[in-house]
Amino acid sequence: MITHLTGTLLEKNSTSIAVGVGGIGFGVGISLYTYARLPEVGQKVSLYTHLLVREDALLLYGFYDHVEREFFSPSSCCGRDWRSDGTSRTFWVQPAGTGTGDSGW
Image 1: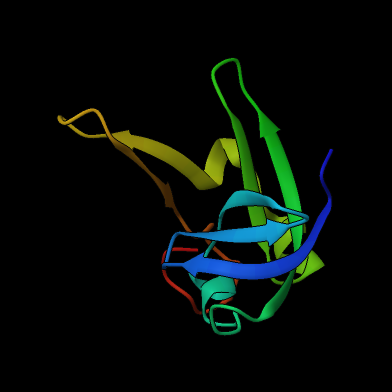
Image 2: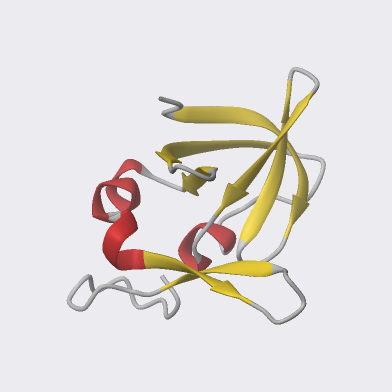
């Protein structure tokens, strides 16, 4: 299990980031809550993580704090949307009653 990741922020967008750690680039799915708190590209970043192991993929999700990670439930919070061109995207849904104020949790 990968529970924490600290390294250099290589890329970022509203749904995912790339973190460089010891010469390895980790692709990490994130929420809008985490995205809003990220440093600029090239700066040090530290995230709590959850590694979701599936038959066809290893999915690493990053969280700004441990509270956000505790609310994470892969079965109810996220999914994968497959497009006609064969690409996909991960989407996030804010659980009702979390009170975070961010849409797209």
